[in-house]
Image 1 (cartoon, helix red, strand yellow):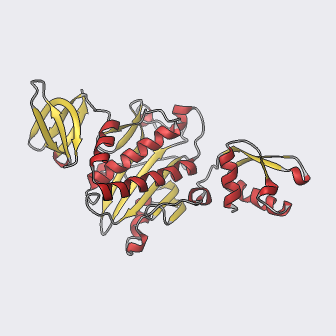
Image 2 (cartoon, rainbow, N blue to C red):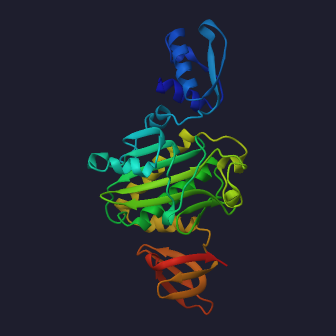
Image 3 (cartoon, rainbow, N blue to C red):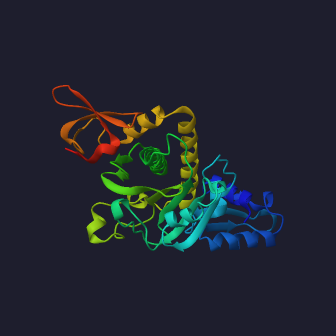
Length: 320
């Protein structure tokens, strides 16, 4: 696929682009159109002869590797990207590449999962071709070798990606411990698994309709399409998400956890709210005031007493 021409069409954002500036012949143009059609791009063509122009009218219905990878200048995450049609789980695919550290940052994507996993043995289900089903293989260094911090990093990146996809509004919120919600409905989930390496799995609802979910999920789930009223460009969102993940991954590794801790807490649903915390050594009701880089959440009880609880000791945290 002609990546330069495709990228110019995408950057034009619906405006017409003269094909002669990028393609040398009508035959080359027709070949490019056939490739675009295979991925489901909606392309409008007008003019004739040397005046033929094209414009994108709808994003690809399939994930497009050329769109995702075009001049993607990341340091680790996304150096290798592969898209499958149907897999058991993208986490499974990523783990199969863990035999070599040369695959550090490998991104596995799929249109459909037959055995997608959620937290605590749950199932992640998604209608074919509607979601971002993505896993990243990592060999993380301290402090991101802790699954909590890697989950936190992904949560911030996904929340930022959701906000960007919805027009830059600060509406995405992190629900403890690994969900992203908008208007108190789940739009994304994160699952970190460790074996010989670590795999970071992300599921993001993009183009499901309001009628897509079974009855038991209909009141708890949403998608970017439902929220915004328009189809999302999944490849564009994946590209932005990979870039944000890679940026945070290196900044945290090199500079420490303070920035991540602050941004994670800023995005939390329970920020500065009264919550009930069930921990290994008891239960408290207090106001959530912050996350410390030592992986402890700070709470203030009604009488003003401060309490710091390690995140790994928290079994349940709910808003009151």
